[in-house]
Length: 117
Image 1 (cartoon, rainbow, N blue to C red):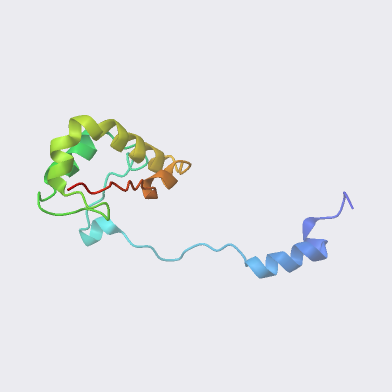
Image 2: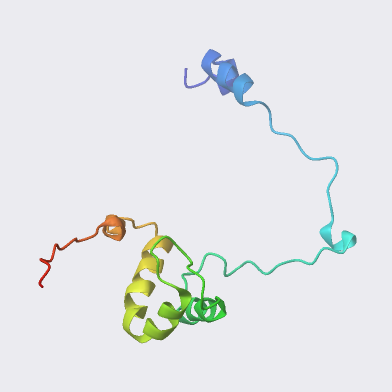
């Protein structure tokens, strides 16, 4: 079988027919001729920076809640020096697809306090 070509092997033909044959495009679209600007996307895969996250937080309206946590944007702005390390870690884990500790985001501790007169 070493001397046989791949095209004479039945399973090659079967899967080749399923997946189709490669083709070349006969027409193309030139976005430059259409006047559509080309975006610079080479840094799209880079990790989030503290400056990018802080810039986004500063642009959020103060009285809005950006997520289900219940914290308004003014909270993030005022508490940024205290919480920025944790926020940066969360973004970096999200970027690297490391979700091992994301279960902690949905954990809550409830403490029942006795009422006093």
